[in-house]
Length: 143
Image (tube, rainbow, N blue to C red):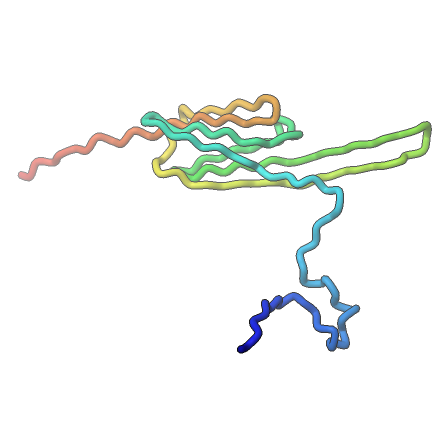
């Protein structure tokens, strides 16, 4: 019976002479202590439109941008978080994080950009996105 093992293309072999040189070079890097900032969302639909609740904690209202293009909605935010703990003049710990988070998604119907509105309170962005009414079809008479 043959042994089945998993193959990890990023695993560096012990026989590799460059083991120490390239160790972890091609692997994703995560900075320890950096917050895990993501935009988490709930999307609800009714016959008139969509309601989106997006959690973006610790972000100022002016640093959030929402764009609508047809049925495509994009949310982006500039994250700036700073924490300092001081005792006298000596800084014991300093944690800073700056970055940009973004999320885009498509909806089943086009959005009426003119009547859409957004509200941000307590770390939650609420988008009310009315569906665009279908243009009435016009029947042409043939001469």
